[in-house]
Image (cartoon, rainbow, N blue to C red):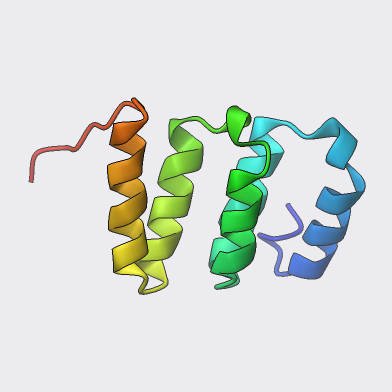
Length: 94
C-alpha cells in the first residue's frame, strides 16, 4: 500500500520491521516496489532471501522488473533458470 502511494521509504520501513512475519504476498509486493523504484539490486536481494517462498508470481515479478528496467539479459537469464529448476513456464501464443 505505501509503495503504490509513492512512499517507498515507508513501505521499506514497514517491511523490514515485519521480517519475522514474512509471507509470500508481502515479499512479492516489496520486490515489485523495488522494481518500480528501479532498485534491482534490492529487488534481487529480497527475491533470493527466503527463496523457498518463491512461486511463479515471485519469478515473474523479478523477470518483469528486469525487463521493464532495461536489464534484458538478466531477465532472460532468470527466465532460463526458472525453467531449469522446474518452475512452470507458460508463454501465451503471440
